[in-house]
Length: 106
Image (cartoon, rainbow, N blue to C red):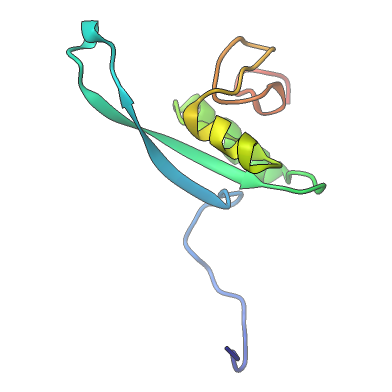
């Protein structure tokens, strides 16, 4: 495909928005009537590069809102983020690592 006269455009997404996002189905415990809910996840893919300050702010904001958000450097890390299996050693929470902890130091 050839794009003639390419130019920047605005996607309308906020600064630092992740590479991918989605919703994972979760079953609520029996004491919560057994309902199924969706939990949002936001994954930023990086190889050896660093996360920008805007990306870090976005990831922390999503964690504060209850979403699972983080940086994946492998497919296994992406799956762990989406499933909420990453354990934060800073706050003890799941779904993020200490670097992206919404309650940790910046």
